[in-house]
Length: 125
Picture 1 (cartoon, rainbow, N blue to C red):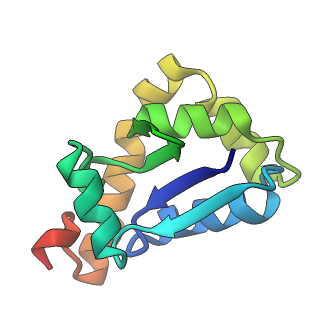
Picture 2 (picture 1 turned 120 degrees about the vertical axis):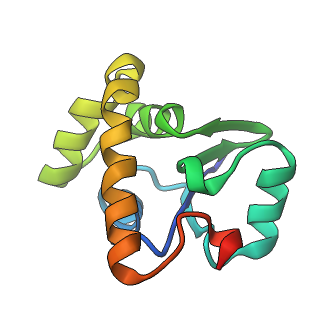
């Protein structure tokens, strides 16, 4: 079964991580989707209680993880060949560590979006 990572394409950090994960993460069935530009996907996730402005989303079938849980689950599945992904895999595959570090990722995202003049919530564009 494929795994889908929904990320904020307006955030350069998020976009870079998603693309590296797709190309170098060792998950042949990983699908990445830009939630900022995919309005219908974002609405569907919102109806289920998952807001992209609060973090990335990982989907496998009907199962959905959000925020630090999504990144931890993705990192648990990665077998990266890339040094940066190897570092992130080591840091974020543990849910407890991911939960502690994830606010830093959200702060970096907030800064990057602010510098680009984009709202945190894609629905407020």
